[in-house]
Length: 201
Ligand SMILES: Cc1cc2nc3c(=O)[nH]c(=O)nc-3n(C[C@H](O)[C@H](O)[C@H](O)COP(=O)(O)O)c2cc1C
Image: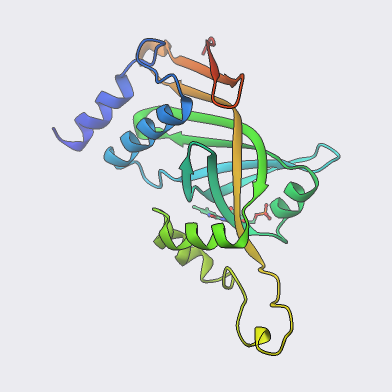
């Protein structure tokens, strides 16, 4: 099958309660794999929305560095606007849009900062590592270590690192022909349990 046919096949696939995974992180894993095999450009680029305590929103693109049962990981500068907003209001929205396969994923949740060790491990091993490394080359190292230790002085605090969005809502939107789009929304109802509802497109 050529690429155009494969994309069309994903884009025309129905999303319904019988085919969707019971766990939305598993569903995300399937859709992310589809986006990669359909060669969607920048499948790990996502919009990250944050807000300050006055409720003023701001949004920008960041790269998804990793995801697992716990949530979605991205990297940024702590002193950036998003870093400051997350420090005062640790909640965020994420949006993926994969145009060529007509899919959108929307996520909301609370956000926690990864500790230095976990940040470093993701940075070295993450699937998006080389892309992120290119972006990060302009931002300085993950951890500033070095001779300070030998002099008995605390190492300078790292200037940037990872954050994890722990989802409480994940919504999958599948564009369909003749505008009969599918939209399934998962809401967290327990530590590992989710409730799935169909919404009108
Ligand atoms: C394709 C793409 C990928 C990007 N990836 C990141 C990223 O992973 N982390 C990041 O902090 N900024 C990334 N940026 C830059 C952000 O969009 C943004 O300009 C910057 O982080 C400052 O945002 P802020 O002032 O709202 O904090 C990326 C931009 C683009 C267009």
